[in-house]
Image (cartoon, rainbow, N blue to C red):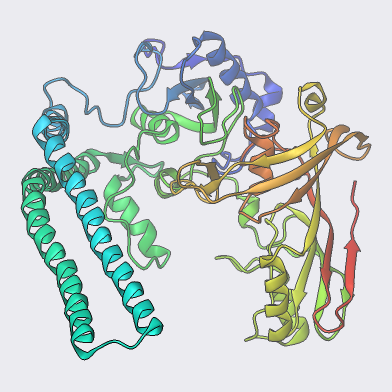
Length: 552
């Protein structure tokens, strides 16, 4: 066993052994003491990275000895291959199939670049653009001449009696100028056609090359995933591509993914489990942490632990963990929570949602605000949910009881006449940051397609998201962990998914994740984000109403 340099020994106090239970759920966990210890040992050996990277440790047992394996996601040059588990399939051999086909694709890229940057192509495009501008100017001049002539004719007709001969001359002039416009259009249409043909010669070549590139890329990606033969704790083996297809078919997806996302199978978790199964090691617990600078779009903090991603890892790990006693994910558990009704009339209700309750039904049978109120009111067809809170967020919601109220409230939200105030608690370290006590955060957001429901900041393709904030100060939380925090009031101008959470956590926002934010920060006993008040106009009475449900 000691000959395996990828197995790192670990001190295992009896106390830790007694506490060992089921394998932690990679999608919702707090690192075990042993995983924490292994992560710290790995971190002590890591260099400073210019680009951040996800690392992982897997506590394992082999022949009565406890130790750990370590891995990094994707590729990373300069790391000792003997210290980390290898890739599930090594496709980077210089003369191997993948690299050979990759060179062919790179050659196509070079051909496309050569054409797009050639003097001939640029000159053809410039001539086409110049001709377009010239044509627009010439046609505009002819139309202006026609307009001026018409104004002069109209003026002449109003000023005095005109003879039949003069009237005929005016008609001929009008017809001539109209014909001039059409002749000019035809002239430039012919010239434009020839210029466009010269450009099309280049662009058709590039289009053909792009089609060839996509075909080769898809084939290579398909071949690559065909080589990934994964194992699980039951001793079964299965192709990665089959695991994905079956996972989505079981969940009733309209169309199972034919090809997994690029990079699937290269995350820490499957690499660690695969090596453990191959070498008869028993996995005990898993932990992944970020090392290095945060990326520009995703929210990742140096040394912070993170759950596995959903897009690439959920199908794989669901299968690879079969045969292990895996802890349940409390986010998927079906539990009953009380829903407080603050106000109710024939048109609407204002409720205080507890953290952990869904606003609308999800894929599971978990209770939601909508399901509770529909049952209470016996309303099963009318839309009632006007706005939402994340499951982990507590606080005030207004819900409609009829269609007229629903649409009236929707219009108020759309016109931004509804005023909402949230309260978030940040770590006390936020007090030491150099930030204005109040201000506005504007960071456009879009979904992370490979790790929903996580959102990313994207200044090119994201939707605008704006939040006003005010730092209230430090507060005491005697019955909670932590016992002290920094209270911040948040006023969303827009209502994007996870807007407040991302605006707090992102380096260009407050750069301080909300306490208990498992997606963008670190776990605590809950997410300390609460919708404290809402103000809106009652659809029937026209009166302005304000409701509060203070928590901290």
